[in-house]
Amino acid sequence: MDFQISHQPSYAMLKVNLAPGDNLKAEAGAMVYMSPGLNIETKMGSGLLSALKRRFFGGESFFFNYFSANSPSKVALSPMMPGDIVHMRLSNEKIMIQTTSYLASTDSIQVTSRFGGLKTLFGGEGLFLLEASGSGDLFVNSYGAVVPIDVSGKYIIDTGHIVAFQDSLTFNIRRAGGGWKTALLSGEGFVCEFSGKGRVWIQTRVPSGVISWLTPLLPK
Image (cartoon, rainbow, N blue to C red):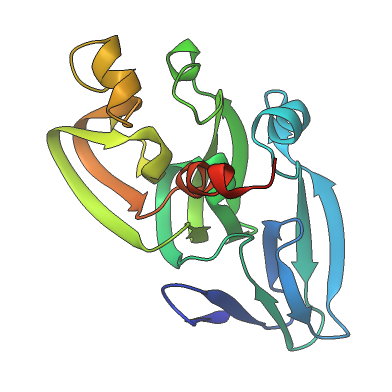
């Protein structure tokens, strides 16, 4: 399997060439085009309350599309929001992904819903994360460009800007600033404080920011 990511960073699209026997798993609804002979099967995601989580909390489909090739085939995928796509090559490791940022992975990567704990309840990003584990190719998407940040010690990131992070990092959700006044009036709300050593991928824009900007302009 080989791939190409085009139209970066604003309108990225993933193009994958599948050899006979290759398999690719993707977010349902992400397919742009595919070869006529490519087989596609839709399956429900796995993990704790996966269907309930992705449908009602994450706002995303709780299904994956599985593409399998019996002959040389092509498939193109793009995320729902305008932004970038990043490739990660996993080697027996785990990456935690914000629920709306998973795009695709090779079949050797296990993707499971994970409960983020009650500390994520007020973080604005839902109660669940996706855990991608194993060895293979993983593709995540963003709203805006993707920026990698290497953490060694502590690092604070707005919850809405998080795309993915290595599971070597621990995190804690807390208010921005020192009190409720700062959290409510600064426009920052809640932040995620990462601790340890590892990498975080962030997005330069958040959908909630666009919604806040558009809402006053909508007809009443």
